[in-house]
Image (cartoon, rainbow, N blue to C red; front, side, top):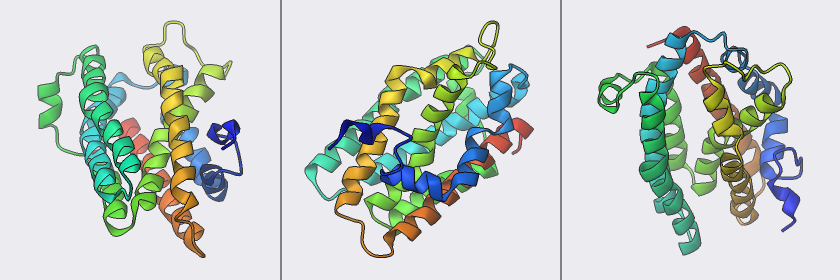
Length: 232
């Protein structure tokens, strides 16, 4: 498979086709006011703390989705890939998130006791529902806006001359998602969609996947709204 299949801007990949079909929603997600205010350092710290608390809870359900991906997998290779992602989230990303949140005065015990915001519940349950009702491709398409979108946002911000990094309290967040390590995770997700779709794309399947991708992207927008407006 050609190397450029990993590129986020390749219109021939399934991800590229889904993003093009949901152009407006994708633009609203990647250019949300929450994101813009991260870039210019005007996002209220209370909004960011609320986002971090909810993101901790989100990652727990995100882990469940990857566990479901192991169950839904049809080959041992697919099972191993999903299990590897699950392990990375539970035993690595969660730990990093807790350490990062500690720098914002948030403890893991406090975050565990927080109630899930409605936007958080709507998003995470939708992803799980699509995985339960559909196959592993439906599940990965529902996961794609989060995994790939954060990489696109991180890269856009770090490459934008208007982004203020010096003295920006959100600099570490921007650099985390623009870093090569996370970019590689997102590129792998694009490639994985290609592999999954190779044997699962029948007549009429694309429109169903567009619907899932659009809804998941819209729920990502709602997650930004939740953080920005400190919604419960």
